[in-house]
Length: 276
Ligand SMILES: Nc1ncnc2c1ncn2[C@@H]1O[C@H](COP(=O)(O)OP(=O)(O)OP(=O)(O)O)[C@@H](O)[C@H]1O
Image 1: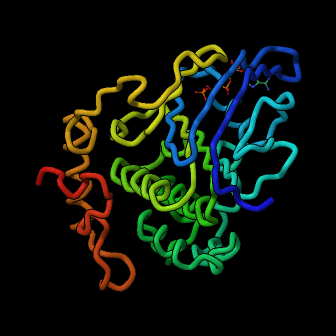
Image 2: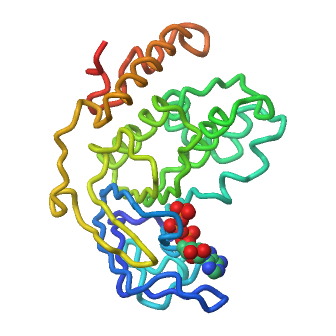
Image 3: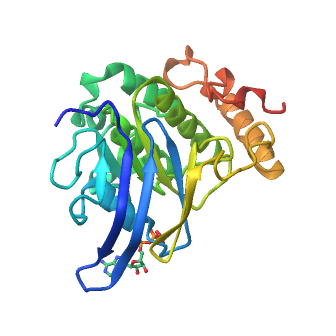
């Protein structure tokens, strides 16, 4: 099925039971418009992963309860729905002695050279890395480039940014925001880490014990957006500044011509105005 140009997400009275008969979700209702960026918030065990798996079509929801761009993601294998979660993180290929260009080529990098190069830049990836000899955060950045390379229309992220340093996460989230602003795509992001996020979401969904406790746009939920420039705490602002200085000190990757993203301030929503 071709990518949908109106990738809204609708969930109607979704009840879900696990194969052992225990209840996973109770009467979940959601209506997330195309182009939205939703933060999915909830304690451990609240049901976030369960919901994201159903939205991605990895698990079957009762007929008519989940629609992505108007169709059931389980019965239609939806091209353009990308779900990045635990199984994806644990894929052993990214721990083998393989180089970055070969990995990116294996997921279609040559078909999307501009996206590939943008992701390399945004995620500050050194193409000379070999994957058995990188840090956890560097590995995660390459994985993210792999996962995001094909232009998805719905992106479901299940807390996959835990290994990223504050600045890399900031740039990654700014990239996702630009994506929703320049093409028809929609994001749901389950996370426990709220640093830097105050200005990122358009919608919030709060889950608890398999139920949606609150959901709506930032305006509907009257979430205060008046925060420091980055939407970060004073401590976060300071750490961001340190990391930015570290990157400038390290200098550019790939031959010395290119500016680091910290020098360019490409974050796109206030990052360039960080206190110096
Ligand atoms: N296959 C399963 N069979 C039975 N119960 C399950 C199964 N998978 C998850 N659960 C239970 O469902 C509940 C919701 O799990 P889920 O993974 O969706 O939570 P979560 O909100 O993503 O939590 P976390 O923040 O820890 O990732 C938990 O209580 C969990 O124990």
